[in-house]
Length: 367
Image (cartoon, rainbow, N blue to C red; front, side, top):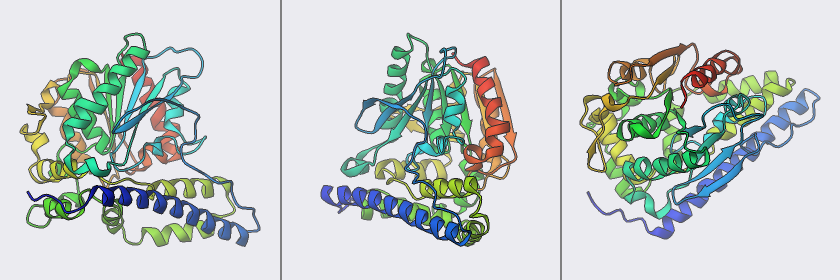
């Protein structure tokens, strides 16, 4: 493995450029929406800046900020800690005031805490899964438990954040009360199109990280967009058609702005993620190691709810289902819902039909 030629200054500049690019995309999307609204004789929508629900900063660590969404009304439930993907911003779970799964949980008496991952910067090429699992996530759990008077949190993991949450639950089974996974790849060889694209004979993650230091979000997003190359055109047609509907336009701008608001994938973690998980399928076969310790799925003992999107093309359903036969949890449930990967958290039908079921399960099993 060669030392990457990217300087610390270059990696900081890349992170700054990513932030500017994200804001420019948000402004562009508002402009497109305003033009479409004008064609329908309607005024532009208000600017949508990011997370929708008021929250507070609990702590600011080197890898993530820990945010707190206070419970509404009496605190009747154990706290919840949300672990999102390292590259996608967490607020897909808090997209709009009327489209927020975090608010669903907070409204039912749970304090919700979120790890808001930071751009990796110069430290990214040296970071490993252990820095996140044994460091940032474990530290957040300890802090949340202390703030809750000793009540351990339930952990919700989404997408790659779900994979990290599952590995964390295997390494630290005593630190969480329940585990909810959404669209979470476990059997990476069964995860769909991405599994084929990242085969060792086709893709060299080491070569890319040697050159870039961290994985640029533009490269990551180009891969996801290639999975459905006509999607962007279809969305623009939909915007032109539906621009007179305030809710549809707000949801379009909010979701598309989130899709363009990404941070770089830490280079050291990316090497592990591709080589050990996608190429070797090490998590499934029990050979994955984090910080010198084996990650054994059988050591997951917390009550488990595995939520699968039946039309998920980023994490195909068999990839998530594979976890059910390998965990040590005696209290486990597979919940399948007819939606896609992003629809698990952003569709109005999911908010109405799926998330009340998840919240009820958390109330019965958390803590």
